[in-house]
Length: 205
Image 1 (tube, one colour):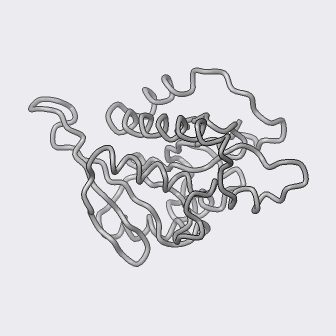
Image 2 (cartoon, helix red, strand yellow):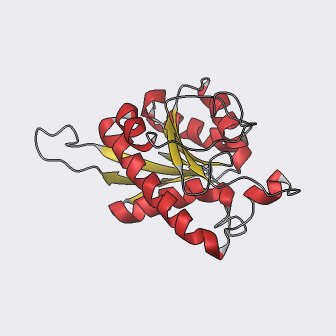
């Protein structure tokens, strides 16, 4: 699972860093141990559990956060692939989405980058858009607000409850994806109708 964000304290807690927040929260909940840190990424690993004969037996989940900036996220995954090998089907990317209301999450098996620089970099690095992604709604920019200012802003106190619910749901969705696959995850987390902006990019609605 690759949680997208920007490194450094200046970006901690911003809307653009919800991918980092999900990865860190899930690592805490699973008791994940440090796996590897390189010039481009930090990662943790946790056993999924399951006794003998269980589909989960002996399986682990690697949580990875790029140490590059968002628009170079693909370099982090490329380095991981060079070190360990990785099939596209094994990847779930957790990313912020301004076209989803705050608190909502949505799983997709593939799709375009929707103007998101992190997804564009990953698609370039992987050579395909056929990787699973979990979009976490951070809400759209207000009237007259620049998009970059919006995604690099923090959450208001009145948004904290919805944010906590979204992070919790994203952790659950990530684990369901790891244990049962993308279809099971989509069936559970995409079933609820959701409002979508009219100008959301085609393929990301």
